[in-house]
Amino acid sequence: MGAGAGTGSKLRWAAADSWTMTRRELAHWARRPVQVVVGLVFPVMMLLMFSYLIGGGQGVDGDFKAYLVPGMLTMTMAFGLESTMLSVTQDLGKGVIDRFRSMPMTSGAVLVGRSVADMMQSAVGLAVMIAVGYAVGWRWHGGLASFLGAAGLLLLLRFAMLWIGIHLAMVAGKPELVQAVQILVWPVSFFSNAIASPASMPAWLGAIVEWNPMSATATAVRGLFGNPGADGDSWAAVHAELLAVAWPVALTAVFFPLAVKRFRDLSR
Image (cartoon, rainbow, N blue to C red; front, side):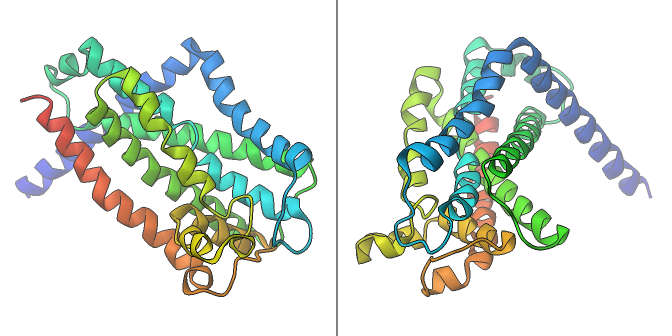
């Protein structure tokens, strides 16, 4: 009974500490409105640019916007990690995290608070992108369950990308190195089926693209939204929904403990 009560008390304190750190991160939004707006506007500009200026749709049958919007929603889950990484490195550089460690606070609450705030911002950004997609003529087909399932897969991918970013930020240690790490997001994003079908690519490149975690999410989301796929008949394309869950879970299982371990090692 006592052990159970002790465990429950620790969980309550951990949740309270994490929420305190979450509110701290949310309070930063009010002090950095330009950064928040830029983070929301940038993916919208990308969507409009590919939709109206650049065009595309190689290997896609039907309306390209129906193919593009789910792909851009997937790419959006990789964008904006730089602000999270910069926040982590700035806290490290200013000694803020060292001060938090001196307080009677649950270990890891800083990272959990950072991740919760990021996920909340990502949900807002996703809602904005869906609204813009609807405004430019994109439509989803199916019930509420399919819509929520697609949104869940997108946020699951974001959660995995977030912990990769947090770990790399602590490895980098300095804000100026974060920008170099952030560049890696671009090839991962564009070597996917977000804006073009693998069928339009050389066979070797198409095979790599189909196994990209972002391609799995994009294909699965298109299926749940009832949008055209044209993503081939390979094992990865046929089992996209399975991979859209397996990839983020596997990445989180690797990088979450690495991030926590790195955070603990910083105090030694």
